Image (cartoon, rainbow, N blue to C red; front, side, top):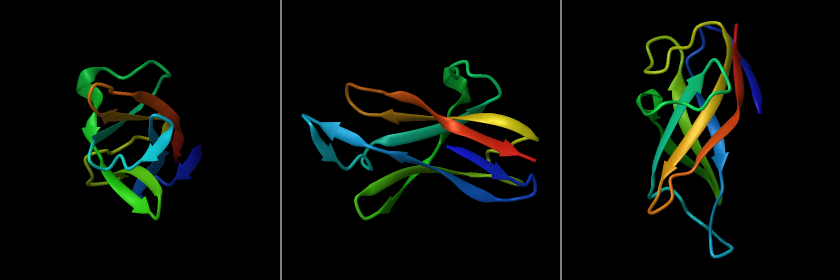
Length: 103
């Protein structure tokens, strides 16, 4: 996923999340979800994560976070790597989900 947004845009960044248990797709929305943005491909540190929320469209699940002016995730111009973390028990998967270019 590569997304381009203007620097003055206030909008949700959405990342599809697929969860399975024993080979069967499951609803992950009972788990806590976090997102962050980094300027390098290096994995984020624990302090980088921000609470995100779930959005559903039928059986498709998205992690989402509001970015832009006056949001908790104000991004300067540049290319940002998008990361998602889901807190489940015992798993806590971390995935790089693509990038967003703010211009």
